[in-house]
Amino acid sequence: MAESSSGGMDLAAIEGVFTEHYGRAVASLIRIFGDADIAEDAVQDAFTTAIQRWPEDGVPPSPPGWIITTARNRAVDRLRREAARQDKYAQAALLHAHEERDEHGAVADDRLRLIFTCAHPALARPAQVALTLRLLGGLSVPEIARAFLVSETTVGQRITRAKGKIRDARIPYRVPADADLPARLDAVLAVVYLIFTEGHTATVGAQLIRTDLCTEGIRLGRLLTELMPGEPEVMGLLALMLLTDSRRAARTTVDGRLVPLPEQDRRQWDRALIAEGQVLVRECLRRNRPGPYQLQAAIAAVHADAIEAADTDWVQILQLYDHLMAIAPSPMVQLNRAVALAEVSGPETALAALDGLDLPGSQLFHAVRADFLRRLGRSAEAVIAYDAAIDLAHNEVEREFLTARRLSVTATGTANRPYR
Image 1 (cartoon, rainbow, N blue to C red):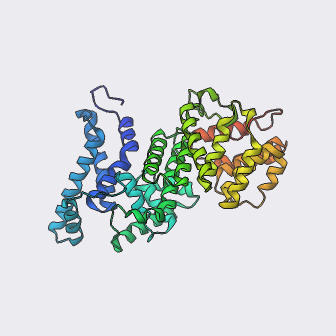
Image 2: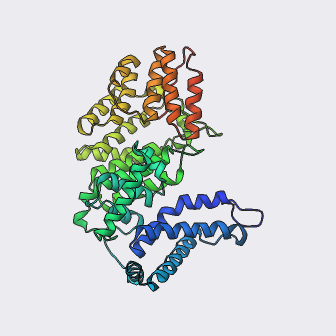
Image 3: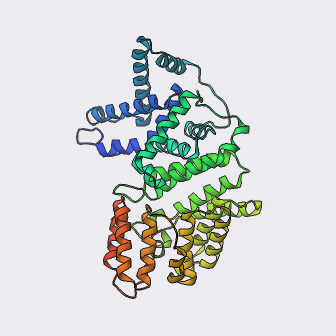
């Protein structure tokens, strides 16, 4: 960790601790106090104190432990003050904090426990995912809004209502019974994958990749496979994340610029992650219970099989997308299928496949469309599409990449592809 000249930690390093450990701290405090708002406020207070003290006092031996302990003390102090004013709610939360919390169940990890809790069937799916991304992933409301292609107001309302539902319905923050785990699995898998994808390509900021979120997504995926070893979709999700993350080192240049998939140096791909992911894909195939994550993992495995970009079996990838469209159709699946279709049948056929696709808030949609138009020599239309993509891109690395593509849109003979 970076330190200041006085021996303490600089603000950027403290922000790094926040990014890496926010979810763990919030999950731990929710288990202690049984309340999301108390946990969030206390963790925020603890990091504010760290910003004030660490640069001068130095870094504690265990920064995340210091944050959790400080946050717990702040929460207890707040609840005692409020309880003294006959605040029944504060009294109840304080009592909850002092109860013996020795729960034993299938979910032993606080963060995974929190995901399953937020996946309670009393909450609507969008609220389940938004609340967990906020509490566990530490994502801001704008980041979640961009991930869902909805307004920030909508996301804020979903989170507020979900917290209210948990409070009013007295939904406990505890480990669900083993028999209840499968019913919550779809929401849990969606959340874990969204945490990972936010790390794979951050919606905002100066860095393309948030390594902490990629690592957390994979960690949670591994825990899920231990929890439910016979569930193919759990294996499929872990395989998908491993195979996708295997390309991390090749996705940017030394100075942080984006490198699209066809231009990546595949010697930098992590062969150990690829091997592990492919073993999981083969195990899924043997079980013969295909699902969306398994099919996406199979697509990633086909990419990983190609030693060079030109060796990619696009016909097989297109067939896998056709299967995915049959069992889990969505506009984003259709968009990714069009990319494969362009490689098999050409950009004109792929552009026609985008007709009627409604993804106005997706910069990837406009970027893909711009690339098809550029390859067809329809430069004026390509510029308009690139402009739309740039307007929707809030990650600086993506904006720079798209801007460079726009500037070169009139060049001929190029073979660049959309980034992935």
